Length: 129
Image 1 (tube, rainbow, N blue to C red):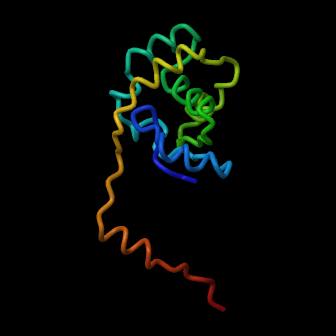
Image 2 (cartoon, rainbow, N blue to C red; image 1 turned 180 degrees about the horizontal axis):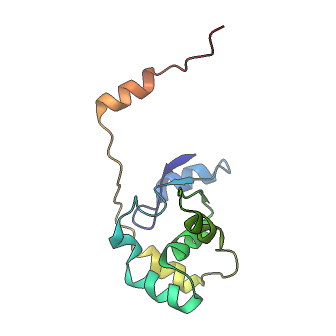
């Protein structure tokens, strides 16, 4: 299920519900929608230095270890390459626990009731011959 998920918004209740059905979260805004305060959190800088990675790579690794599906978007070839280079290290349980303390239940996406109504009434247009 694709929903907003990142270290500031970990979706604990949804994870419990989805876990009953073995449904995984696909993280939307996995790097906090470009929020520099998330990427620049002290813990991510420290872990990046420890593992020889960037803070973004540490965050992406966190997603994987949380059991999330994560597909970060980028048009920059170097960023795409870096985003894939997260499988040669593993965060410890203690590090995962420290990152868990960042959860602020803070969303970046805020939908309006009008947007919800439009989404609920949307119908795909099929090819016309």
